[in-house]
Length: 286
Ligand code: SF4
Ligand code: SF4
Image (cartoon, rainbow, N blue to C red):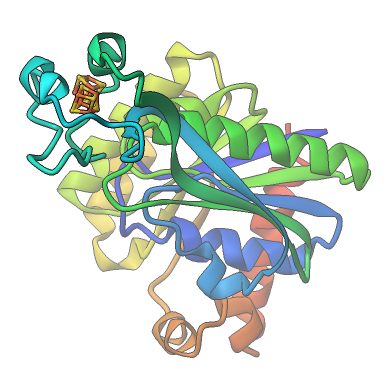
């Protein structure tokens, strides 16, 4: 089963709108949204949630007020000032060290896994979607990305899907590294700007390190032809295929304002053919 990851090195390059458009050409795939810190693919694909799961992260301390003798030992031993004067643990300050549990004479403290977010299996037009949402202030997004990807693989196997299309996280940190594991192709969306070129090079290096095949899409290429040529030269020097150059389409803004992908919104044959060719290039290519 082919796994295609769409990444960009930074936000705002059109990665998610591309993923949404590509889902219009296949109805036998599972889509995974691995941008768990700030997911927005659901705004375009409008998934209907079928199953919901809790994402549990590290342990934090909980005080059972009924057992507590109010001796104050826990407050004095906590190095992180995580316990208030009325014996309540601040879950954002607690580091989960467990010292208070160990020292409590009344055994009124227990360590429990903190619920840090939720993840979902949903149905969309193209098939199934696995997506997630971390709660504000929660960490461990790399771990949640791995959960989303593994669940997407299970769902794809159950559904006998032809492939998994993954919307990756922006940047080059842990969530992106987690989303790169075991994919067949990293499709990098870049744009012809100074930062676009810089971020492209960083993410190519990352993919090369993990020996992942890379292809590139230059979005809004006509806004800076010189930078577009620089990107093409760079890709040529690295033997990276540029799958497509997408011009700036005003229809994209209109489509987003209506919560649609450009392929659903537009009836411009040039746009439809362009995205159809991209779809062919990533699913049928090497
Ligand atoms: S150490 Fe235990 S008994 Fe003492 S105040 Fe803390 S929770 Fe209550
Ligand atoms: S687990 Fe550690 S950090 Fe959390 S409240 Fe207890 S002593 Fe403080």
